[in-house]
Image (cartoon, rainbow, N blue to C red):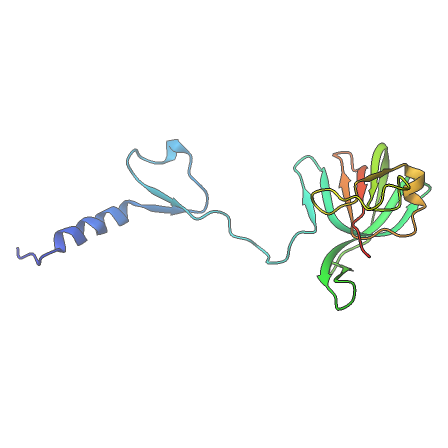
Length: 170
C-alpha cells in the first residue's frame, strides 16, 4: 500500500469526523457511547419577528410594549401588543404588532403602577434601568393619567395584571 505524505493524518481526521454526531438538542448522557464526541447546533428559530410577550410555562407573562385601550374602573385593562419603531418626530413611536389582537385582563388587588413623570408630584422625571417609569402611582392615580405610553404589563400565573409601567415620551 502506497501512502502520500500527510495522508495518514487526513485518514485519522476522516475517522474522527465519522464518529461525531450532529443533534438538534444535546443528547442524554446515557445515549452517547463514551468517547464519542457530539456537536450541538441548538434550537432553530421559527420566526424572525420578536415575540411581543415573554410567556412562562405556568401562564405568567410579560407584555413588553402595550398600547393601552382602556382601564375599566380599576378592575380590568384592555390593550394591544405593540412595538417601538423609529420616528421622524419625537424619536420613536409605539405601533401595534402586526396581527395583534385586543386583550383584556383583570387587575390584581395588589398590582403596582409606575409612571415616569406624573405620579408623586414634585419628584420630576424618574426612570428605572430599563427606561420605564419609576414613580409609583395608586391605582386611581394611574387610571386618571393623561396618557399611557409603551406600557409594560406583567401578568401572573392566574392571568391577572400585577404590574404596569409606562415609558417616558416627550
